[in-house]
Length: 548
Image (cartoon, rainbow, N blue to C red; front, side, top):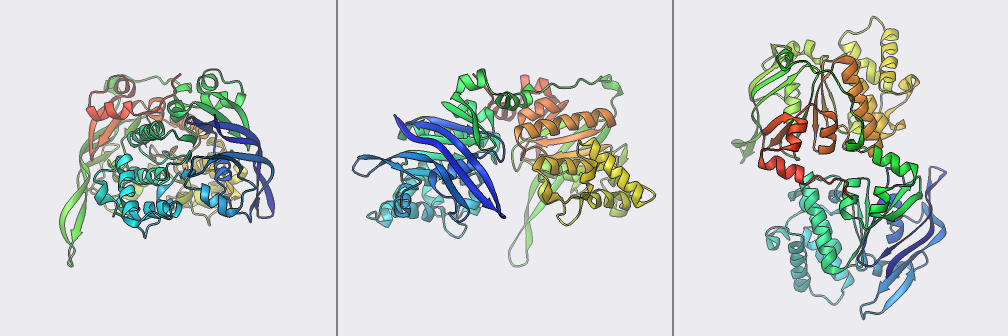
């Protein structure tokens, strides 16, 4: 039986005097108890579709010139009424939102109110839709809701504020809040994108378990085909506001009919062709980076006098060698110390102890002035290109300033020409040097970040989660670009990530990090095929893969 039917929906947005056809004539339906996945890249219209269904788009910038959103509204007495969401009064929409249609947003920290406890926020939702419910009853229901999403010690956690919970726990609170009123339709907008792979696996299992228990239908929005493979009964692929393909899971993934669907599936790391490189014999591979017993401890201070009472051992005695021309993937979950290790190797964070040798020279104890000659040969590409690029500088100045600092080029004209050549190397138009960061897409900004590292002609680059925020096709382009640059320049890369699919595609070796230590290391193919450590096995088992 159909719960939600969308017919020829159009959602147009007004922005800066322009009209954007964000959703342009789409139709689909969701049956009771099923999971329908809406798949597509950034800007395809997935989230706007979801916000149109629940009617949360600001009226002053949005309009629906055509289409219908038909929803079977269940009254408290059990009577079912088919309503048209686009023409309902605001009062009736408020009755439906939260009670019959609930939504889980991508980023729980911006969705939860930081000044109220998680319990108060669930209680508010319950009492809003159940005016006769008393505070104590609502509080008990809130505790039960937290227990259902497996928050430990729910009776105590109900008094916690959002900032005191981990990312996975905050997302569970969002699910508890959404499910507290037992909605008929749950809209989940990229609910696991920001989570570690093991936490993601737990959240997906939890959603399926709650769905079976409550009979809830789910509209699941994602760009991850591995998640789609685990969750979907049916799916639709969106591109530029239109649905280009729709059907049962096995049909669409097993035999995609539209070129765009085939293109997205071909861009998955496991489906990308990997260029082969001649490997020198093991005895001839000299370590470019040689780390011994590296420690980075951060002090924990308490009391009025801020005395040090303990330390956070972010990096706790690590040995790591990276041969010249190789790519080592550093894998682990949030908080394991990956980024701290990468930055300490570059001496962007001063180590507490241990040795760091680069090109055979000890750099662990060098002063800032003594480090300067090494800086141009050791570079980093950051995870978020938006925050790592100065919005006030053109691409030309972004690329030319590091060259000037390190004495590269005899004149600005020579440095400008080098900047243009480097943009060509990262497959961008050389004339882009006169643009500002806000004029580029996420993938283009990441290419500029790579270009900024390359203009100094480094030998070693730390790539810190450089593809985690990118769509699958853009991710594929960046990975192929890095492999090509490695081949051309004999670059050595430390590739920090939590995406096992990316690890399998891009790296020669992998090291698994847990609790500030490396628990397993070896050739990538061997570790993935036959993991020895229990944590590595758990990490690999949690990876969502496309299965038919």
